[in-house]
Length: 293
Image (cartoon, rainbow, N blue to C red; front, top):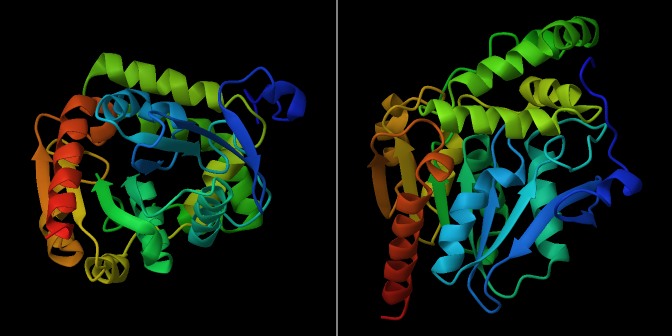
């Protein structure tokens, strides 16, 4: 694609931030940081974001004694642009591979935002015994899928559409994630830097084609029956996964705690890291006290 001027390989990765681990489908870009011995929080990102997205929230969590695992989904950040079907199974498998290879001791806290919330719920349903708590922020899944998803599934039409409009689609998506213009510009620069690597637009288009982003009521309903504490956070000015879905998600997901963050757009962890860090720490503390009774 035009603008994809760099390649990910062993040589180029040596100069890049983060750590790299071979998983079953490819190399995953990750960072495990924070106080040794702290409770582990695994953070699962959305459609376009690299692990750097979590930096400010990670700082807040570290200050409260948590250890964190952040990673870039395949096709994002410095993870491999794999040549496979970019469906839910791929991203759940990546999360299972990564957390398994890191040999995390005991159940961990899982946080998912936007599309990452769907990945987190699907993982939690398959690996219930590995989860201490589950937190969703601005979750996807109840909005209609993109109108052009069917076109992207057609090899000829999808290739043409991705090559002609891929960069434009990315720009439009990024333009309404964050309400603050300065934060929005910083996020766009962060994501665009990762999209200089060959295969990035392919991965984006393939995800839009094959990842089930809409009509996920059953997944929410199944997750609502899971036995561990759950928290829901949502920005009141979210234009990507609108707050109009809040009541339905609350009814299906049955969170132990839920909060509408105001004023805030789609990206609570990025826009309001201090408030989210405080909410998360209080939530975990309450869950810990309840389990000890």
